[in-house]
Image (cartoon, rainbow over all chains, first blue to last red; front, side):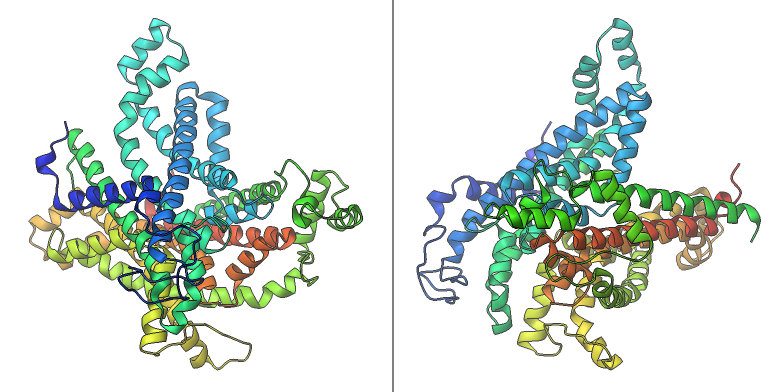
Length: 276
Length: 319
């Protein structure tokens, strides 16, 4: 089980930071000193005791916007990851269990989708779709499901030939039982460490889209969009755009540290050689 | 060169072309998935019926989707990419110079990052589990988590604004002297290098480590070769194929990275062209540029496959 005393330092830092980000996101309205769209001071005011991180390109408090931005960024990334995981894992397991033309058909289609760089295909699709949160989540989730599909199919193919699955099949259990009762519990540990990586990817992907002006639309704000809003200040030596960018990096690094630790721990459990 | 190699290569190229054809269908379909009407979504809700009818006529939306697809494909194959809706310009002409700019930028980023990644990867393997390896791996882990624009704007903030060494906006024009052009792309090329370097290095390290666990490496160790000799004589030749693969895969990352980096540095390349026209909902441009990006990506993967075949005698003579 989880042995909290033996967490490596890196993973502990990662866990604490991730928890802090989550708490900030959940309790955003309670923590933020000012409102999301409230204009409180001069444009790009420097950091002061009144505005801890200064103000942004319209004179809104940057700290408050960062806190609300955490909410938007994490919410969309979590939803997209949840979608890509449920879709990818269920389809991947089904492909492995059912096999035959269904497996071949789905796998070739996924190969095809993966032959186009994700960002490029997302841009192609977003050029005709309306810019709403739902579209963003759907596009990110479905495109990312291809990666999860690959992994879960590969894992499930191995499990599918084990004796206990064979026994369940001989018992006459249906595909639903095989997928959710036999394969899913045994495939969880590789999938969970992948979950962290997919979440980071979703955060970075969303931020890139918003930075390009194709993700979250104003007046809503996420961190990528805030970089876009404040990027013109860089030329005048105002680092306001670097703060949300650094927050994205910090979130990604801390989740990465946790995912790395989980990955090592699960390979250890399986008799793997840890950091080989 | 024996004939089985040529046959294998021909097979890979044919497969790649087939894949590209399928991708063109997918890209075309990707712009048709809207339940409503493309013309409506381009012009917005307030469009007049006349404007809608005109745009439909111009896009050929009155024909069924498969007819439009073959019309588009026919155009692409004969070098006619259509005209942009927003500017009425011929897309092929607009792309020409930009494609060259993007390739120029990606080329220099690749020239710097590939040798650097391989050397650092080798160092990490040589001093495995030592502080060099730990530092390199830690930095790699951190930099795969960094968004491209963080790296980009950090470079702009320090090199262009604080110390004013390089320009923060990369203006290039035709007939620009080579040195000036290099100065203009210094920051975007550095940013691109940093974006792909970590990943490439990590994968190089993994590829070489994989080879290092083979039995013949143990033999070489036991007969008393020095670690560098082992890597140079036994590990590296066998690691060439996987390393080439790693390099090609990461050049594909370059393609995606280039989109964001070009926007940061206002560099007149393909990526910026794509992003501008996605925002304007200019479907013909997006289709054309998307197809070109996909073609380059698939092309790199084919090259990776072929290089792996040529570098590995076992793949050259399949059983």
